[in-house]
Image (tube, rainbow, N blue to C red; front, side, top):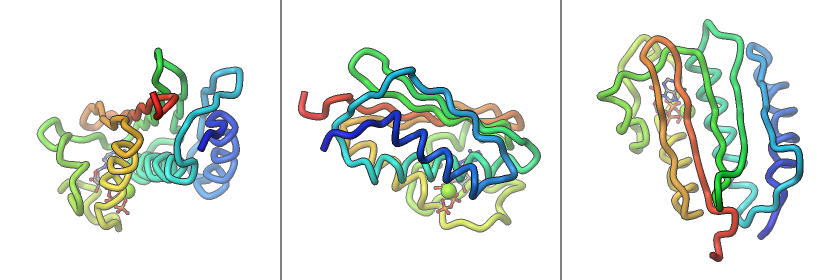
Length: 151
Ligand code: ATP
Ligand code: MG
């Protein structure tokens, strides 16, 4: 179904800010509403998982930046943190089911399922999910989905 993804992200930020008081969630949105074709609850789950990770894996930072916009016929969201980062050889594996990176954060609780679910949801919207990271500096997770799935 069609839903306004700009409105959804603005509302979601309010909730996520309340549940993640340790970090300031900065949201960069396009000025106008944007209707996209997809499952709003699933897309919301992707953003929740990415922001939850960004907060969890940046224990010494105090900001997470969420940016949304349109690139051609795609809607793109990025979630940036200034945390522990991911080593280059682990970058692809974080999307695997039950995979967790062995590092200083290994003691943090989690199943290693969050990113796998994000990837499945994005793929079902004919989109893609990827990450850029600098170990020890931080990470940016991106996802992109067609504005209109029917096209
Ligand atoms: P959960 O199932 O509760 O989400 P999880 O957070 O460990 O557990 P994923 O969200 O799938 O699982 O993430 C997989 C692994 O990728 C994490 O264990 C962590 O090692 C790494 N990771 C994910 N997001 C980040 C991030 N923003 N910065 C650094 N490492 C990350
Ligand atoms: Mg997670």
